[in-house]
Image (tube, rainbow, N blue to C red; front, side, top):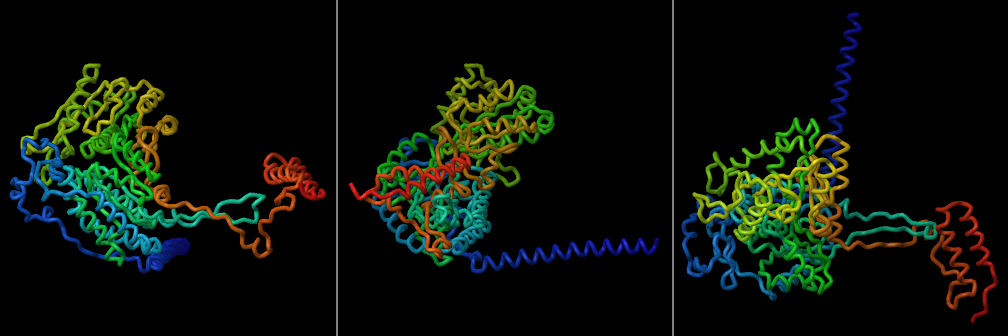
Length: 628
């Protein structure tokens, strides 16, 4: 027995040693494979000038003084972050009103021509680069972003008024995810792909290749200054294109730093910095940009109102447009026992979905639709959370007491929001907190809207139909799953959606029947953090960016049909049968019908196909006409 125990013990140790040895071999193989396939793709560290406003020793007091060329108070809509005065843009921080530096002179038609021309010249050489060379640029960008998160986040907070946590989630995390996804999977999405053939064309080889378009453009919104700017650049560059980015004038200040980062990465990898152009322009010049014949594709992120103008303008040059127009995203909360038991988790995710970036989020949760058994519990959970939210300017706040929510980009929507809320209350909705603009005691020039909770909201109310883009938690009650789906589909928007539940049948019913471009189950916006194709249907736009589909949308999809190698070796190629050559034979029609039957009747049955083959051979063997 003793020897048996020793034997078993030794066998066990040997088994563990064997497993560890195999794991070690596997790890070494993976590492060596990675090193082999990434030779020459290592990230390059580089530096670019950091804006002085992001440095701790910067003296903001000097920038608070009027400079003489700034619009006087009576000419400046206050509090609105970005003032255009005498043709120049005066950027300010919406969280506290501080001026961010000298005014920006927007681009005119001549500057737009120059930017597109420079990009086009640089793209000729860039289009010939390998995927490995393009990956190296993206690795270099990834290295910089990871090393300079503090500066990038600070720039976003200054320009858009958001908190550092909001900036980390919405600017940094999703950007490094897109960089990593493109590095790991971008080439696969754009590799040459084989396509099937058919019986009549059995000697053909079919492939699809993805070629660069040339110069593309992106007109992006202000809610995520860094990510919205760099995201289309990542895809455009990897697809072999050059790109012109038009940021919103409301957050144009930070884009001068961001363009330096991108161009710095290109230069560090010995490529032309002209591949990426930053065009800050006003609406009058934007029409010239979007109708420019030098552009081959436009990505637009913004409002439906502006989208109509962009698409009308792009149609002048027949430039294709991918359009993302925001939404009225629903979150259905089912009332199965597991969901009720985990209501704390559901509430915390919904809070992030509603109040991320002060609700200024295209896939923000705009409607929470709860079933009866969980509705009141959810209301009781979120009410104290919402009333305790702290507002403020994160860069002026103590690290030990940071704000939960930042500022709004502008006060232009405040009257509309207040009217929508008042109208909903008049129609029977219950206002629990908020509902109006907030005058911050520490930041009187800041732009804040009080976090709002509104329950008993019904689909007939205008507030349940209009996109708010604001920190407003709308709670709606549904009688059952079918009713919840009807409410979710009751608006003209269909961008994203969420479903919280653990009854698999009910969850899958919601996922299948909700009209949306994307659905997250027991989560909010997770599809974007996984680099899935992004976009909506109905009034939320068309086309996709992100994932394989986003890269291919920025490519010329070229189909190639050629003789396969085995056919070439046997001398097989297309030849027109004599009876179908000009002038055609009187038997030509019989031949054509028989050819079609031979090629496709076998799908319906063998006997029918055999009959077609016989008719084809018979028609071909008939005596030819002597002419007409």
